[in-house]
Image (cartoon, rainbow, N blue to C red; front, side, top):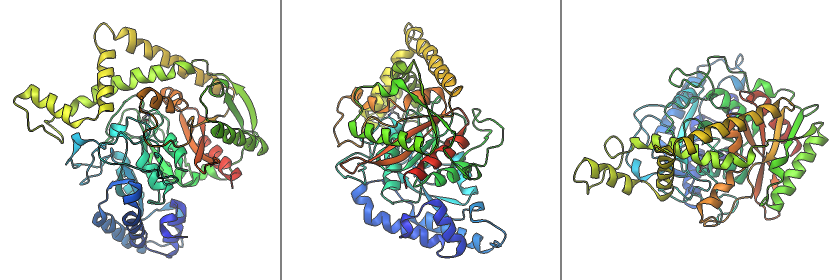
Length: 484
Ligand code: GLN
């Protein structure tokens, strides 16, 4: 196996055994980046010198440890991780794939980056995304095209498309993505990765550029469920800089995988998710096969109902743009990035900088969000959407009173060709299966479930209740075993 093909667990084992150094591992990723990135476009920028310096420092630290007393999983000294370009890493660009943040350099580390570094990971390379995480194909990036490593004529999904393409194309060991309505899970499904959207509040968002603050979560995108557990364990936990993160200690997600089984696990199949028209027949075939694999491995299948599913898209496309319109007000040409050269006064500085800097989808969201929040419409749209969101959350509570997890398709189709969804609405429909659980704040994962007859990867989604990541990962791991 080539070094760039390794996942986190394998890389760590090799590092602990002294098979290779972190500098060699990091160099292998950099070489791979030079060989493949022009074709795939996963990375926007890569601070090679910085990554190698961190790798050499990691090698130094690892040499000074007594490996006879430390298990490989205890310390991850020097494994490089690709970072979605909306997470701040001190001294590196953070553009959110937007022209408005051209030239912006982060003055501080996000909490997730501090956590990564404290666990011996190296933030290495900035990966592409839909501008400000708005989209499902990475076609909304203002800075570059990312291609699906399994078929270069197709999109990698989005918004964490660069993360997914980097993992799926072996341009990194693992990556961080963010998920607001599906942006970790859908691209993971398109690029044959494991992607975990943690429960709302599980991972700090301090230093992560906000899209929709009542939904955003950072999570791992990896080559295996074990790697997702390792990375989530490093990321998760209380942070005094993010009041949504509870103070309770984080379970050991890696230890939770020991003896993972589907025996006796109650898996719910939400009937509304399978009644949807537009589910691609190949995705349906692979989802059915996944259901049968769970059953064969001892799971008990239960039909459940999430009756408010049909309202989830409408609710999301009120709440997410509303929050985005407020969050993106800070990009005004004064404090960050692009400043219009044509500005004559303060007002035109704001309007021209924003008009020049934001792409069309971001503008669409800001306009929608401003509209639903405007006086006279607030109660009719935003207030009502919040109430329906509560009903959607209660659907999940009721389902999880009956079952351990839900199994659903992750996305209605496999990766689609560039330009396939010109109409924003048909693009939005990609997140049909991932949006309701995001609104409910529960945790969910996309796990590879095989390939279509056109050799495109497809993932299935497991959903568990809030803060049940240990259970989610155990079930995902046991399912992963059935696919070998
Ligand atoms: N595709 C959805 C959107 O465009 C979700 C994006 C996300 O999860 N960041 O809003």
